[in-house]
Image (tube, protein in one colour):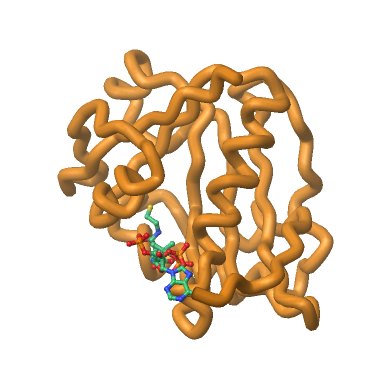
Length: 168
Ligand SMILES: CC(C)(COP(=O)(O)OP(=O)(O)OC[C@H]1O[C@@H](n2cnc3c(N)ncnc32)[C@H](O)[C@@H]1OP(=O)(O)O)[C@@H](O)C(=O)NCCC(=O)NCCS
């Protein structure tokens, strides 16, 4: 298996790519988050990164670039807002979120590299556990060591919450 050479950069450094990935995110998850919009996601991907342990403020995003600087995929690390308020009380962040690889560049290890990057970043910030919520990709994350924690509904659609432990 050939591995692709990637660079991971803050998404705000490539504002021209934000709309494309915001559209992909909205296509994938718009039905789960009725308050979401392409405009808000585009704004978020253009925002400056701010590493913090304050879950109310944590909202970071990165693109994976190929050797020519083309963005292939996106990932986010966010403090809250992934599950509905009743579940959020028992399921605090931080959350790995917004992971999308452009369909033209899948099955080359882009998502795996982004997941590894965000896992390390969350650990470096000082978090001990990282969660995510997924509708269709439980097995994909289980193969990468994530553990299924709970079922939740997002806009009445069943989803799984999963976690990984970040201790050294
Ligand atoms: C799920 C998703 C993020 C995976 O992205 P990806 O970049 O294709 O993921 P990877 O390439 O890291 O891994 C996918 C598979 O390709 C395989 N692969 C990786 N590099 C490869 C290569 N060079 N050649 C062949 N296969 C390869 C991996 O082994 C992996 O299979 P596995 O899960 O059985 O181990 C992508 O399909 C996507 O964006 N889906 C829509 C949104 C979504 O579901 N997001 C995540 C859920 S919340």
